[in-house]
Image (cartoon, rainbow, N blue to C red; front, side, top):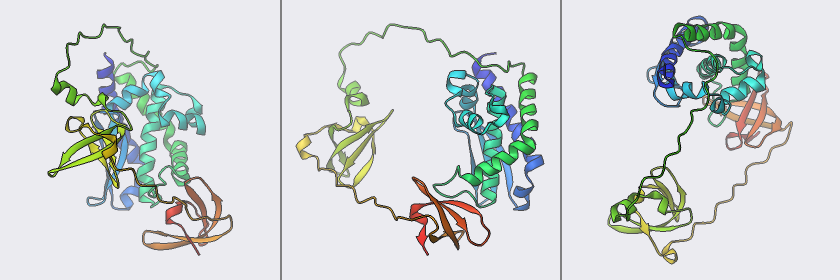
Length: 303
Protein backbone atom coordinates (compact mmCIF):
# COMPACT_ATOMS: atom_id res chain seq x y z
CA UNK A 1 0.00 0.00 0.00
CA UNK A 2 1.40 3.41 -0.94
CA UNK A 3 2.01 6.18 1.59
CA UNK A 4 -0.98 8.10 0.23
CA UNK A 5 -3.44 5.24 0.68
CA UNK A 6 -1.96 4.28 4.06
CA UNK A 7 -2.44 7.84 5.31
CA UNK A 8 -5.95 8.08 3.89
CA UNK A 9 -6.99 4.79 5.48
CA UNK A 10 -5.55 5.76 8.88
CA UNK A 11 -7.13 9.21 8.75
CA UNK A 12 -10.59 7.67 8.58
CA UNK A 13 -9.58 5.20 11.29
CA UNK A 14 -8.65 8.11 13.57
CA UNK A 15 -12.10 9.64 13.09
CA UNK A 16 -13.59 6.51 14.66
CA UNK A 17 -11.08 6.76 17.53
CA UNK A 18 -12.15 10.38 18.18
CA UNK A 19 -15.79 9.35 18.43
CA UNK A 20 -14.88 6.36 20.62
CA UNK A 21 -13.06 8.74 23.00
CA UNK A 22 -16.06 11.06 22.96
CA UNK A 23 -18.25 8.17 24.03
CA UNK A 24 -16.31 7.69 27.29
CA UNK A 25 -14.99 11.22 28.01
CA UNK A 26 -17.67 13.46 26.52
CA UNK A 27 -19.99 13.97 29.50
CA UNK A 28 -18.82 17.59 30.10
CA UNK A 29 -19.51 18.35 26.44
CA UNK A 30 -22.97 16.75 26.34
CA UNK A 31 -23.91 18.25 29.73
CA UNK A 32 -23.18 21.67 28.23
CA UNK A 33 -25.68 20.92 25.46
CA UNK A 34 -22.96 20.62 22.83
CA UNK A 35 -22.36 17.99 20.14
CA UNK A 36 -19.10 16.80 18.60
CA UNK A 37 -18.16 15.61 15.11
CA UNK A 38 -14.93 14.45 13.47
CA UNK A 39 -14.02 15.06 9.85
CA UNK A 40 -11.13 14.24 7.52
CA UNK A 41 -9.10 16.99 5.85
CA UNK A 42 -6.87 16.57 2.81
CA UNK A 43 -3.98 18.71 4.08
CA UNK A 44 -1.86 18.99 7.22
CA UNK A 45 -4.37 21.10 9.13
CA UNK A 46 -5.48 19.21 12.24
CA UNK A 47 -7.46 21.25 14.71
CA UNK A 48 -10.51 21.72 16.93
CA UNK A 49 -13.13 24.37 16.19
CA UNK A 50 -16.28 25.31 18.08
CA UNK A 51 -19.35 26.46 16.12
CA UNK A 52 -21.15 28.64 18.66
CA UNK A 53 -24.25 29.02 16.51
CA UNK A 54 -24.78 25.25 16.39
CA UNK A 55 -23.11 24.50 19.75
CA UNK A 56 -21.01 21.95 17.91
CA UNK A 57 -17.35 20.98 18.27
CA UNK A 58 -15.59 19.81 15.11
CA UNK A 59 -12.24 17.99 15.17
CA UNK A 60 -10.47 17.85 11.80
CA UNK A 61 -7.78 15.23 11.13
CA UNK A 62 -5.49 16.13 8.21
CA UNK A 63 -4.36 13.34 5.91
CA UNK A 64 -0.98 14.92 5.22
CA UNK A 65 -0.48 15.30 8.96
CA UNK A 66 -0.97 11.55 9.31
CA UNK A 67 1.53 10.93 6.51
CA UNK A 68 4.02 13.31 8.14
CA UNK A 69 3.79 11.57 11.52
CA UNK A 70 4.46 8.21 9.88
CA UNK A 71 7.79 9.55 8.54
CA UNK A 72 10.50 9.89 11.21
CA UNK A 73 12.30 12.94 9.81
CA UNK A 74 9.13 15.03 9.72
CA UNK A 75 7.36 13.48 12.74
CA UNK A 76 9.87 14.93 15.20
CA UNK A 77 9.05 18.47 14.06
CA UNK A 78 5.42 18.33 15.19
CA UNK A 79 4.20 19.70 18.53
CA UNK A 80 2.89 16.21 19.31
CA UNK A 81 6.41 14.80 19.38
CA UNK A 82 7.66 17.65 21.56
CA UNK A 83 4.78 17.22 24.02
CA UNK A 84 5.33 13.45 24.29
CA UNK A 85 9.02 14.01 25.03
CA UNK A 86 8.53 17.00 27.34
CA UNK A 87 5.70 15.59 29.44
CA UNK A 88 6.60 11.90 29.23
CA UNK A 89 3.32 10.84 27.63
CA UNK A 90 3.38 7.17 26.56
CA UNK A 91 6.70 6.85 28.37
CA UNK A 92 8.27 9.51 26.14
CA UNK A 93 8.46 6.97 23.31
CA UNK A 94 7.88 8.15 19.73
CA UNK A 95 6.16 5.73 17.35
CA UNK A 96 3.55 6.47 14.65
CA UNK A 97 0.67 4.98 16.70
CA UNK A 98 1.68 6.95 19.81
CA UNK A 99 2.04 10.19 17.85
CA UNK A 100 -1.40 9.75 16.29
CA UNK A 101 -3.01 8.65 19.57
CA UNK A 102 -1.59 11.76 21.25
CA UNK A 103 -2.97 13.89 18.40
CA UNK A 104 -6.48 12.57 19.11
CA UNK A 105 -6.10 13.29 22.83
CA UNK A 106 -4.62 16.76 22.15
CA UNK A 107 -7.49 17.89 19.94
CA UNK A 108 -10.11 16.44 22.27
CA UNK A 109 -8.49 18.29 25.16
CA UNK A 110 -9.16 21.53 23.27
CA UNK A 111 -12.86 20.64 23.14
CA UNK A 112 -12.95 20.11 26.93
CA UNK A 113 -10.90 23.28 27.44
CA UNK A 114 -13.46 25.26 25.42
CA UNK A 115 -16.41 23.87 27.39
CA UNK A 116 -14.70 24.87 30.66
CA UNK A 117 -14.14 28.42 29.41
CA UNK A 118 -10.37 28.09 29.78
CA UNK A 119 -9.45 28.73 26.15
CA UNK A 120 -8.41 32.39 26.09
CA UNK A 121 -7.43 34.50 23.13
CA UNK A 122 -3.65 34.51 22.98
CA UNK A 123 -3.47 31.77 25.62
CA UNK A 124 -4.55 28.45 24.08
CA UNK A 125 -1.83 26.00 25.15
CA UNK A 126 -1.95 27.27 28.71
CA UNK A 127 -1.51 25.43 32.04
CA UNK A 128 -5.23 24.64 32.17
CA UNK A 129 -5.02 22.95 28.76
CA UNK A 130 -2.09 20.76 29.76
CA UNK A 131 -3.86 19.84 33.01
CA UNK A 132 -6.81 18.56 30.93
CA UNK A 133 -4.47 16.78 28.50
CA UNK A 134 -2.60 15.01 31.30
CA UNK A 135 -5.89 13.84 32.82
CA UNK A 136 -7.06 12.53 29.45
CA UNK A 137 -3.81 10.59 29.09
CA UNK A 138 -4.21 9.16 32.58
CA UNK A 139 -7.86 8.16 32.14
CA UNK A 140 -8.05 7.18 28.46
CA UNK A 141 -4.55 7.21 26.96
CA UNK A 142 -4.16 3.42 26.99
CA UNK A 143 -7.57 2.91 25.38
CA UNK A 144 -6.90 5.46 22.63
CA UNK A 145 -3.48 3.98 21.87
CA UNK A 146 -4.95 0.47 21.70
CA UNK A 147 -7.63 1.70 19.27
CA UNK A 148 -5.05 3.42 17.05
CA UNK A 149 -2.85 0.30 17.01
CA UNK A 150 -5.93 -1.75 16.08
CA UNK A 151 -6.56 0.66 13.18
CA UNK A 152 -3.02 -0.09 11.95
CA UNK A 153 -3.61 -3.84 12.24
CA UNK A 154 -7.00 -3.83 10.54
CA UNK A 155 -5.52 -2.01 7.56
CA UNK A 156 -2.40 -4.21 7.57
CA UNK A 157 -0.11 -1.20 8.01
CA UNK A 158 3.24 -1.59 9.75
CA UNK A 159 3.50 0.46 12.97
CA UNK A 160 7.12 1.49 12.33
CA UNK A 161 8.34 4.73 10.79
CA UNK A 162 8.61 5.06 7.00
CA UNK A 163 11.93 6.16 5.50
CA UNK A 164 12.13 9.63 4.03
CA UNK A 165 11.17 9.50 0.32
CA UNK A 166 14.21 9.46 -1.97
CA UNK A 167 14.35 12.39 -4.36
CA UNK A 168 15.55 11.70 -7.88
CA UNK A 169 17.90 14.15 -9.45
CA UNK A 170 16.53 15.37 -12.75
CA UNK A 171 18.11 17.94 -15.02
CA UNK A 172 16.33 21.29 -14.99
CA UNK A 173 14.03 21.79 -17.99
CA UNK A 174 15.39 23.77 -20.88
CA UNK A 175 14.30 27.39 -20.69
CA UNK A 176 14.04 29.71 -23.60
CA UNK A 177 13.90 33.50 -23.43
CA UNK A 178 11.43 34.58 -20.79
CA UNK A 179 8.34 36.13 -22.28
CA UNK A 180 6.81 39.29 -20.81
CA UNK A 181 3.88 37.24 -19.46
CA UNK A 182 6.17 34.73 -17.80
CA UNK A 183 8.16 37.57 -16.31
CA UNK A 184 5.00 39.09 -14.83
CA UNK A 185 3.94 35.93 -13.04
CA UNK A 186 7.40 35.16 -11.67
CA UNK A 187 7.19 36.32 -8.06
CA UNK A 188 10.87 35.56 -7.52
CA UNK A 189 11.84 38.67 -9.47
CA UNK A 190 10.86 40.64 -6.38
CA UNK A 191 12.70 40.56 -3.09
CA UNK A 192 12.07 42.16 0.31
CA UNK A 193 12.95 45.84 0.15
CA UNK A 194 12.14 46.23 -3.56
CA UNK A 195 10.03 49.19 -4.62
CA UNK A 196 6.95 48.25 -6.64
CA UNK A 197 4.01 50.06 -8.20
CA UNK A 198 0.52 48.79 -8.99
CA UNK A 199 -2.88 50.17 -9.97
CA UNK A 200 -5.69 50.32 -7.43
CA UNK A 201 -9.07 51.99 -8.12
CA UNK A 202 -7.61 54.07 -10.92
CA UNK A 203 -4.64 55.25 -8.85
CA UNK A 204 -0.99 54.23 -8.98
CA UNK A 205 0.15 52.97 -5.60
CA UNK A 206 3.84 52.73 -4.77
CA UNK A 207 4.94 50.39 -2.01
CA UNK A 208 7.81 48.38 -0.56
CA UNK A 209 7.96 44.59 -0.69
CA UNK A 210 8.19 43.19 2.85
CA UNK A 211 7.96 39.48 2.03
CA UNK A 212 7.81 37.12 -0.96
CA UNK A 213 5.22 34.35 -0.45
CA UNK A 214 4.44 31.29 -2.58
CA UNK A 215 1.84 33.01 -4.76
CA UNK A 216 1.77 36.61 -3.55
CA UNK A 217 4.02 39.38 -2.32
CA UNK A 218 3.44 41.26 0.92
CA UNK A 219 3.67 45.03 0.50
CA UNK A 220 3.62 48.10 2.75
CA UNK A 221 2.81 51.66 1.74
CA UNK A 222 2.67 54.12 4.60
CA UNK A 223 0.00 52.76 6.94
CA UNK A 224 -1.33 50.34 4.29
CA UNK A 225 -0.26 46.70 4.45
CA UNK A 226 -1.46 43.79 2.37
CA UNK A 227 -0.74 41.12 -0.23
CA UNK A 228 -1.02 41.37 -4.00
CA UNK A 229 -0.35 39.08 -6.92
CA UNK A 230 3.11 39.69 -8.41
CA UNK A 231 1.44 39.81 -11.83
CA UNK A 232 -0.15 43.13 -10.80
CA UNK A 233 3.12 44.74 -9.70
CA UNK A 234 5.97 46.34 -11.60
CA UNK A 235 9.30 47.75 -10.43
CA UNK A 236 9.01 51.32 -9.19
CA UNK A 237 11.47 54.10 -8.53
CA UNK A 238 12.53 53.75 -4.87
CA UNK A 239 12.45 57.52 -4.54
CA UNK A 240 8.69 57.45 -5.14
CA UNK A 241 7.99 54.99 -2.33
CA UNK A 242 6.84 56.62 0.91
CA UNK A 243 8.96 55.73 3.90
CA UNK A 244 7.39 53.33 6.35
CA UNK A 245 6.01 55.05 9.44
CA UNK A 246 7.96 54.71 12.62
CA UNK A 247 6.47 51.99 14.76
CA UNK A 248 4.40 53.18 17.65
CA UNK A 249 5.67 52.55 21.11
CA UNK A 250 5.13 48.95 22.08
CA UNK A 251 5.70 49.57 25.76
CA UNK A 252 3.39 47.33 27.72
CA UNK A 253 2.04 47.79 31.22
CA UNK A 254 4.38 46.67 33.98
CA UNK A 255 3.25 44.41 36.78
CA UNK A 256 5.07 42.87 39.72
CA UNK A 257 4.57 39.71 41.78
CA UNK A 258 1.91 39.96 44.54
CA UNK A 259 0.32 42.97 42.82
CA UNK A 260 -3.50 42.96 42.87
CA UNK A 261 -4.96 42.93 39.34
CA UNK A 262 -8.19 42.10 37.49
CA UNK A 263 -9.34 41.07 34.01
CA UNK A 264 -12.60 40.23 32.28
CA UNK A 265 -13.62 36.62 31.61
CA UNK A 266 -17.01 35.97 29.98
CA UNK A 267 -17.96 39.60 30.70
CA UNK A 268 -17.26 39.16 34.41
CA UNK A 269 -14.32 40.62 36.32
CA UNK A 270 -11.83 38.18 37.82
CA UNK A 271 -9.73 39.64 40.65
CA UNK A 272 -6.40 38.09 41.46
CA UNK A 273 -2.76 38.45 42.44
CA UNK A 274 0.25 38.38 40.12
CA UNK A 275 2.47 35.34 40.69
CA UNK A 276 4.82 35.69 37.74
CA UNK A 277 5.47 37.96 34.74
CA UNK A 278 6.24 36.01 31.56
CA UNK A 279 7.29 37.23 28.12
CA UNK A 280 3.79 37.47 26.62
CA UNK A 281 1.49 36.81 29.57
CA UNK A 282 1.14 37.35 33.30
CA UNK A 283 0.46 34.43 35.65
CA UNK A 284 -2.39 35.36 37.99
CA UNK A 285 -3.92 33.46 40.93
CA UNK A 286 -7.63 34.24 41.37
CA UNK A 287 -8.50 35.54 44.84
CA UNK A 288 -11.92 33.87 44.87
CA UNK A 289 -11.10 30.24 44.08
CA UNK A 290 -7.30 30.09 43.79
CA UNK A 291 -7.43 29.15 40.10
CA UNK A 292 -4.29 29.98 38.11
CA UNK A 293 -4.60 32.00 34.89
CA UNK A 294 -2.19 33.18 32.21
CA UNK A 295 -3.46 36.53 30.94
CA UNK A 296 -2.02 38.61 28.06
CA UNK A 297 -0.62 41.97 29.21
CA UNK A 298 -3.13 43.84 27.05
CA UNK A 299 -6.10 42.29 28.92
CA UNK A 300 -4.80 42.83 32.45
CA UNK A 301 -5.56 45.84 34.67
CA UNK A 302 -4.10 47.00 37.94
CA UNK A 303 -6.61 46.80 40.79
